[in-house]
Image (cartoon, rainbow, N blue to C red; front, top):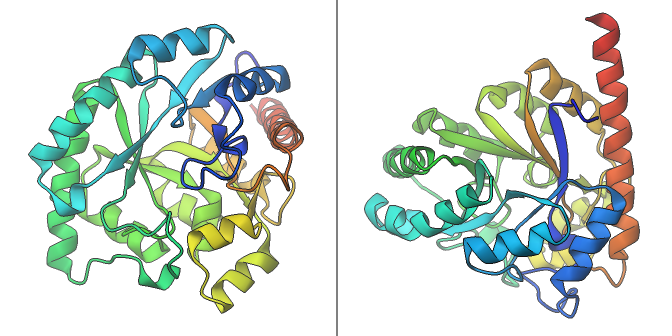
Length: 304
């Protein structure tokens, strides 16, 4: 896989959750990094336990011979100006670029309920085309800035936020320029009422970063029926790693190869490590994805 266009990374959320610190909060970052490296992951996304300086991030990753995949940025753009957002985002761009990351996980948290025990139906929304367009114009300006710093903005559609459903994602892509990339998250797509493969088909040209998250469909149905909050979804096991749930990742990976996607696929699953032990589940996700990548590449070589 040394010559593969796909690199397999992971998010530390398998070990500790920033939104719900009670889930793995006692686990040091060094445990996540050492176990991830032992499993075979090439890189990690950031979480709240990483140092806050470019040099600090470089040091902890270098100790484990790991790459920086990307890092979440909490945006307040829905409630402030593009200029204020650019000022706020500049230091994060520098940290990512300094460590070789070329994409930024961009999450809109203005008004978000993703970390609150509030039913997902109460998430914030844009209520008119004018509101969508105003947000899109601001976002395009911010994305042009991050691109000028060597980092592509990868917009994370997310449960409990302004952009959650397939219709929201379609709207966002329609009101923004090509500077705005899309982070494809299979689990959030399904939980938001979408077909992950259909979303890939519609927006493949804008997808610049990928999270492969699996779901347990029966739990997702319970979440919808009982109007759970996002934390409820996490602690009750709506999400898991590839190979442990109900999504079929083979056609998604095939679609990415068809589009000549080159970059990271990140194994991610918000769940309780006391119920889903971190090492075992991180390894299951890696082994599943590594096998899929090997099979897909072998098929493409055979038909080349």
